[in-house]
Image (cartoon, rainbow, N blue to C red; front, side, top):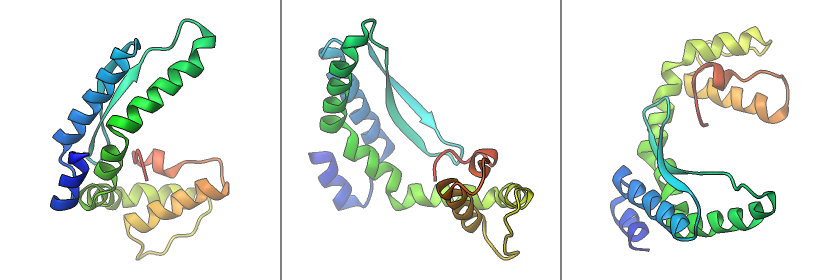
Amino acid sequence: MRALEAATETGGVPVEVAREAARRTVACMTAAGLDAEYSEQSLAGGLVVPGYLVASADDDGADAARDATIDECVTRESLWINKVLQLQPTSIQQKEDYANQQESVLRACLEEHGIRTDPDASGVDLANMAAEALRDGSGAFDCLHEAGIDTW
């Protein structure tokens, strides 16, 4: 795919390239008979993630076929572009900058739930601690959510 080759050459995917890929995904789904539309999500840190919405099938038995069509269109048109967009250095920097801005919220939440924090820990360090608490099940709390961090 030319867009991925360009991303390799330039070191990233511009959001407009990801938008075009998402629109191709919607066109693929629509051509296959699905009720799909373009959608965009702006994460709290400012990262724009282009995507799609697909209407549910009326017939429960059609879900497997619908899901297979969605998977096929996404894989062919936008999966890798979307991954590169979200994992490229500029996107990661945006997420880290936002986590650092939310340091006090993260620290207060973690400490409120009994997790000791290092006074020198950055917002990124605290976001990693909050993510680890979610993964290991050490609490029924979500400090990332409380800090407005959409993805980590």
